[in-house]
Every structure is written in C-alpha cells, then in structure tokens.
Amino acid sequence: MIYLDVTDQLNELYVKKALQAVKVEVNGNFLEQVWCKIRVDSCYDLLIGVCYRTPTEQVFGKDNHSKLRDMLSDVSNKNFILMGDFNYGPIDWSSGACDSGATEECRLFLECSQKGFVTQHVTGRTTERSLYDLVLTNEPQLIDEVENLGKFATSDHNLLFWKINVGKEDTSTKAVRFDYNKMDLNGIRKELRGCNWDEDLKGNVNESWVLFKRRLLDLQNKYVPLVRMLGEKRRKEIWLMHKAVRMIKKK
Image 1 (spheres, helix red, strand yellow):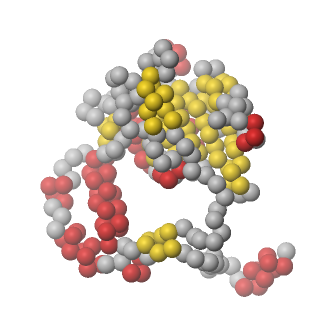
Image 2 (tube, helix red, strand yellow):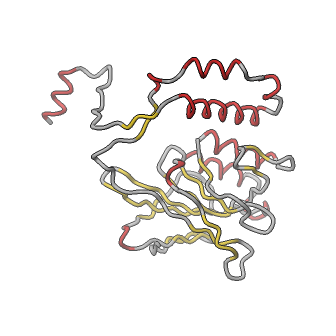
C-alpha cells in the first residue's frame, strides 16, 4: 500500500513512505495522468502511473485519444505499470481483437498496445456494462492475477486488487529460457504443413496477426525445450576487443 499522495486533477496515487517513491513526469500532452518512480534494486526502476480518459470530447478535445496513445508508446519501452479508467469497452483482450461495435479510436488504442508489446491484466467486466478499468504493464509476469472485489462504495466501478512481482534477482540461478538448439524442427514443420492458412486467416489484418502469432507461440511452447541457465556469463559484444574488456575491468 502506497502513501505518497501524488495528485494530478482527478488522479491520485498513494505510495507508502518506506518505498521512497519519487514523482516523475512522462512525456506527452495527455492531461489526466500522474506517475511516480520506485527503485526496486540498485539497477531497476519501476514506473507506476494512474490515468483517466474521459469519454466526453468536449472536456479535452478529440485529440485526447492520440495523446493517450503517445503516452503509452512513450512508456512501453520502460518498466511500468499503468492503471486507470480508459473507457475503451469493446475490446476482447483475451483474443487481442476488437468487438464488431468498436470505434476506430478503440481499434487504434488496441493496436498501439500491441505494437508496444503491452500486457493487459484485467479479465471480466469492471462495471455492469463493460471492461473499462485496465492494468497495463510491459512484462506479462509482473502481475500474476487481478482480483475483482466487487463494487467500491457507491461507485459503479469495481475495486481491483493485485500483487506486483518484484524483488532482488536470485544470484544463485538464472532465468529459464528456451533452448532453440534442441528444438524439434521436424515436429514444427509437420504441424505447419498441416495448417490451412487460407481458411485460418480469413479475418482482418489484426485478427489474422493475432492468430498467426498465437500459433507460433504454441509451437514454441510445444517443441522448444526449456533450460535453466546456471552461472551464465555474459558474452562480450562482437565489436568489443579483448583489450577494451581488460581496460573496463581495470577501471
């Protein structure tokens, strides 16, 4: 629980003092946003933000959609969590496609999140009508599951609860990775030859890309074994000469 009291118009972010959060500004002209930065360890900063996109264009204008996308694009290459009421209802986040009644702005927002490889963690409706409240991160494993606690007081929105998976790196082991040197190429080729792409890719470009990407990920999980990297040393870059490596170590 956080108690920093970072406030910006309708958005409030409370951060526990012990976390030593610092208010930061994110590039972009989207008005209803507020951010802080938390140092997780000596080399890892986590951005935490809250935003609200009003569905009333008379308040901030029609370009409010593009400003929100600009903000999301700006943080998508950083370690971040962004939560808030985005008011984009007709999106099926599980399939990565918009519903038939979605507006063009809704489709552009989904496309922006996909281009930045952003993960949306909320499942199910957050109001009686739709899924308006989102929790976005740059890392799928950063949040395990978002729990819906029901309506919050007199609000028509539900209260959401989740835990963030951060901490110091375990130096005794390394991350589990795919071992592509031992993948079953014959099995992958056999399954790909059995795919009827003309039938599978009948949807629009976005739907076809989501299906194609999901098919490749399924093949990866099925035919590429995992390996746990123990005591792995980082290889030097090809362009870095051994003399330069020795000078860096000496420094």
